[in-house]
Length: 141
Image 1: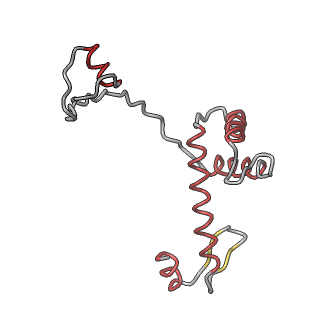
Image 2: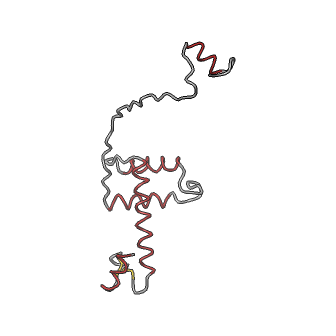
Image 3: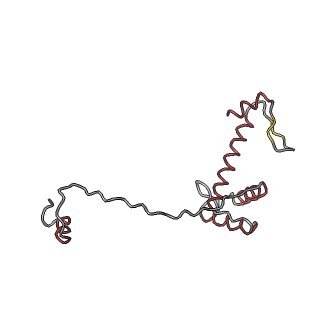
């Protein structure tokens, strides 16, 4: 029972309910069905990836970047510019950000692979070259 004058006592008095002596009543949770909107998957090709890299490079300056990456305003601007250059694409800002993360991850993998001894970079084909026995090490790492 709640002390007289306490907010709980007053609430119980107004609503006409009796105190439950500290026992919580469990109410059944009702899950609302949320309509799932399926976004079209982003279909990237090498030309669009190159355009995105060029756009990111163009905006890679202190004005557009904060301490941890591009600002939200810069992402919105880059998305708008990307859609102006390629009106047939309908990528969301999130899809463009995810592609940037994916490209960054691929870049780090190639950068680490190039550091291994016996591996070289072919500037003509833009590919890593290594002997077959070194490829096993590259694939594992």
